[in-house]
Length: 163
Ligand SMILES: CC(C)(COP(=O)(O)OP(=O)(O)OC[C@H]1O[C@@H](n2cnc3c(N)ncnc32)[C@H](O)[C@@H]1OP(=O)(O)O)[C@@H](O)C(=O)NCCC(=O)NCCS
Image (cartoon, rainbow, N blue to C red; front, side, top):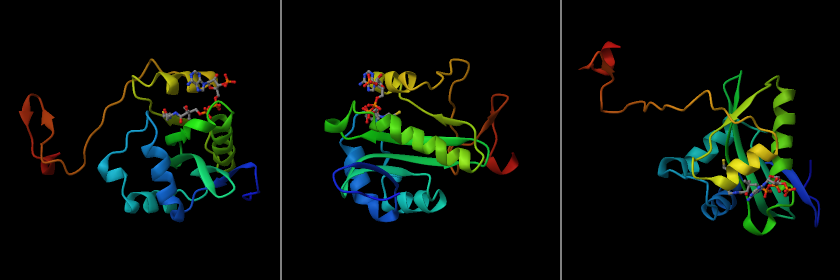
């Protein structure tokens, strides 16, 4: 893969793309950047751990689309898929996802999950249009590691150390 002149090229993100990726995501509705996930440290760590899976779309040296992809060896997870507003509806989002799935097949991962905010209608339309399955049999829960709030059992509070 290479960044050719005047063409949209899909190419892995590298740690040097942090500023361009942040600028892209910050300009996009539908991308929720938590403070802890917006730091260079998070980006470098994520890219280093998932080298070759996190992809960007470029015109020359301008980053116009990006997606972060991680995996747990069985399933992959897509985050922050975004295409710059003026380049939307040209098939770039679809190309990025196709390229991700190709890379995942290469490492024997056959399924990827992603989260969409409930009010992100554009995002929902996109995922449905490209053939993603809308899971209505599941909902998402989150736990925070290191939270000061202890986990609860049987209505009683238990300190994390006892679980
Ligand atoms: C979602 C997003 C990445 C799509 O990128 P894109 O390059 O415009 O998507 P594509 O051109 O590949 O669209 C493929 C198909 O998805 C559907 N689609 C895309 N955007 C749509 C929209 N805003 N409304 C309805 N359908 C849409 C269309 O069917 C489209 O095919 P068509 O243009 O031939 O009709 C882009 O809109 C974006 O960056 N949104 C903001 C960030 C975001 O919400 N990301 C998703 C987080 S879960």
